[in-house]
Image 1 (tube, rainbow, N blue to C red):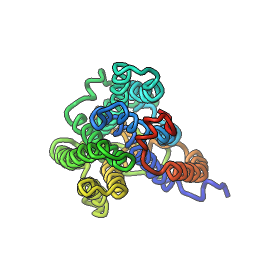
Image 2 (cartoon, helix red, strand yellow):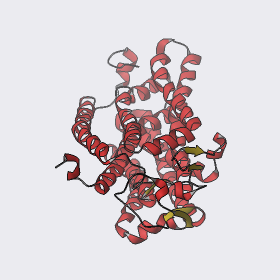
Image 3 (cartoon, one colour):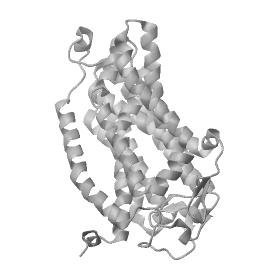
Image 4 (tube, rainbow, N blue to C red):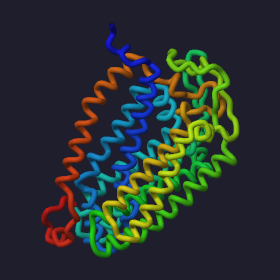
Length: 385
């Protein structure tokens, strides 16, 4: 018996769809508070010492948190090659903007305190703000465009033709609303982290801004859902669904129709737990921030992120990248994956290494548990930045 046949192709495809969601959620929960912290930096910290406190709250962990982004990109490349090809080529200008912003972060961390100049340090503080604000916004904008469909088609030889024109096409009203949902969600998460890691005025300002972000997350998430229901067409199959066949998107037919993105929720009521968790987590984070409960606040914020991202994935299933100009070319869980053997080998590797990453990350957070000491910052002891 060939080993990889122990798990059938359909099951492996579902497993890798779930794993992709886990990696995206893992990135949003871990590196998300780094992005939120950067975007909050100029507002929650007034003095140079306070800003160094904020920077050092994420300084020891931000590099490790980006492992989830690398894992997510690697999973898309290896498990869903057509998805990687379309998204990374069609969204390349947006990707460059994200990469530029992410590059500003390590440079800002390393160079900010190299000169004792208020102008120099202020410039790098705003660079760190860009490094948090831009990715948090554009990741949401990308999700908004995926929900609407991406302008690509496949030739008869499965060659990809992307027919979008400019970056500004991506910045359409619905996508910008999704970007604001992402931004407010990560600002809430970043504020929860700062409450956990700082004291005094920084923690108090973080609580205030985080409370506003939590309420904004609830309102914007609700508006996004209403807009999606009333004004955005979804995608559905119009041919037989073959779940264990070869990966060929053109072997099916599909169409756009109104209200389709809510069909899974009607067919499987248990999926309503995802949007409910998105709302409940943000509401609970708001209440816990007002009550100054630090650890429960960041857990509630993480639950909200889990719910919001899961809401999108469950609504679209089995579509992962619909085509707005040729629905037949849309990529789905059933026709855009790597081979049966590839998915199996990747699953074995993942089951070995991901637990090691989680264990190591957990150990790092345990070792670094505690608040950033402002006195140690002033004395120049015990902190990197």
